[in-house]
Each structure stands twice: as structure tokens, then as C-alpha cells.
Image (cartoon, rainbow, N blue to C red; front, side):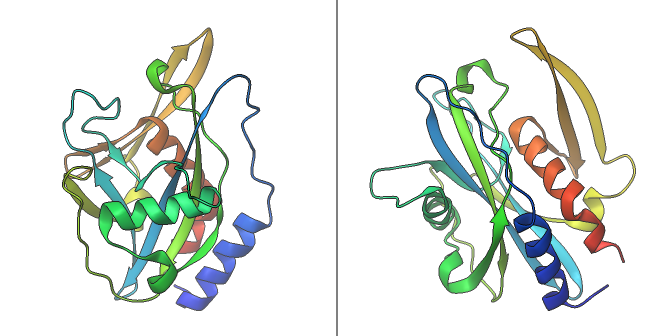
Length: 201
């Protein structure tokens, strides 16, 4: 596998070399951002996901997700939101411990209760070791998943769901009892489609 510097350069080139698709907003939308956090250890690359706590007031209760959340007053832009939320939820300070590699397409959740959200995913790579400090109010568990596992046959299944008269593909990943689906599955699928080949051994 190529070196860290080569992979990071290639990820950045691929992501920044394309124009991210933006949701055409009609009406009132809630802006949110998430962070795809990558790290390398002993030649293996991992991606960070969190499991949301069970909460009847949370439409994403119990879901696997990327760190992130809604834009708040004081956030300078969508990237600032992703960095702030990642720190609040996991204790990871991307500005001090990582580099930003780019931005993926905007996504709308399929969930009818959340379809007014516009979610912007960013990609970051950790350049230093970090100590995870979960915010237990927002994070039940932090899971580092090997990218090599997500690329194995049988890990991904694709199902079609109908919403508002449209057929939408739902990308479902399975990892050791965890199920990644919905908007997180769609974001993960796009990320792997763009740069997954860089992690071939």
C-alpha cells in the first residue's frame, strides 16, 4: 500500500478535483455537517463512527453515524460546524490533530421527519494520536472500523426505499453486529466509491 503522504495527497486530489453537489434549497432547511475521520495504524486505515444513544426525542436514536450536528450561531461556516461537533462529541480536535482533505456532496435524509435537513460531509485525517472522550449525552459508543473490512464482499447490501414518490437506494453496511444505513450509509458509500480503491493492499 502507498505511504500516508501519497494516500492523503490522492484523497485530497480526488475530492477537491470534483465539484461537490449542493442541495437546491426550497423553503426552510436545517443545516448540519458531519466529519469523516480517518486514521492509520500499522498500515491499516480506519474510519470513525459513533453510535447514538437511545433517546425517544432523537429522530436518529440508536443509529450509527459520523460525528456531527446542526450549525449553531457562532459557527463561521459548515466546516466550522463539523470541527466543533466532532470535538464536542468525541474530544478530537481536528485543527490540532488532523488535516481536512475535502468535502463530499450535500445529502438529505430519507427519514420524513428529517427531510428538511441538509447535511454536508467533510473528510479529515488524523496526523497524531488522540484520546477519545465521548460526550455520553450524544455518544453511546465510538467505533473504529477498518476500511479493508468495508470493502470485503458481502459487507454491503443495497435496498430500495420509496419516499415522496421517489425510489431511493439505501446502502447498508454490516460490521460485527453494527448496521450502518440511511444517510450515513449513503455518505459512506460515496466516500468509498470515490477513494476506496486507494486502500487496496
